[in-house]
Image (tube, rainbow, N blue to C red; front, side, top):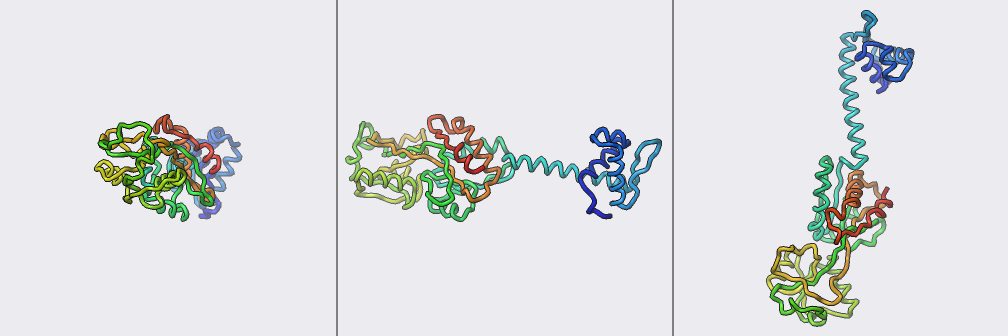
Length: 316
C-alpha cells in the first residue's frame, strides 16, 4: 500500500460511496462530477493495491478489504473532526490551558473572575501561582506564565499592562482605637504610632512609602510582617496601625476600622500584565476577553476600571 497517495478527500469520497452504494448519488452529495468520483476511487484502489468494492445490481458493495478500509476511514475522519472542533475551541479561547501569576493580595480578587470563567469554559485548564512581588517579577522576567497581576505594574521591557480594578489603600486601626470615630484626622497625629508593614518590595508598602515621601513624613516605629492576613490580625490585636488594600478587609470583621485620614485612601489599581514578545495562549486571550466583558458584573461597578480593551489591542 502506498499511503503517500492517500488524502482526506479520497477517504471522504470512499466513505460516501460505500454509504450511498452509488457513484452518481455521491457525486451529487459531494458536489462533484461522476468522472471525478470514479477517478478518486481509482486512485484509492491503486494506493491500497487490493479490490475495495464490486458492483452488484448496479450497487457499490464493499469487499472484505473495502469494509475494513471503510471502518478505518470512518474512525480517522471522526477523529480528525474531533481534532478540528478542539482546535477551533482552542483558537477561540474556549479550551486549552494558561497560567497566571499574581501577588498575594490579588488572591482576594481574582477568584471572582476565574470562577465564573471556569464555569463558562470548563475545558480550560488554569494554573495559578501566588507569591510576593519579587517572586512574581522573577516569573515575569523568565516568561514562566501567560498573565501576571500586579497592583503596581513593573516598568520593564516587554510589559503590556491593562488596569481592571480600583485598589484603594486604606489606613486601618483596631476598633477600640481612640481615633476610630474621629473625622478628618491629620496623618501627623498618627506618626508616633507603630505601623505594621509588608516586606520590602511589596507594592502596598512601596505606594505607602511613596506617599510618605511626597508628604515629607517619616514613621517613628514600624514592624514588618509577612502577609496581609498577619497584619490584619495584628491590627485587630492592637499591635499597631496599617495601610491595607480595601479588598483584604472582610465586611463582617468588626475588630478593625478604616480611619478617616486626610488624603486617604491612597488610590491605586490592579493590572493584568502580559509580555508583548511572547505568544499568548489563546485560552489566556479568551480569559482577558471574558474579563473585559464582565468586569462590572463580577467585580462591581464601584470597583471596575476597564482598561483591558487597550491591552487586548496590543496582544492580538
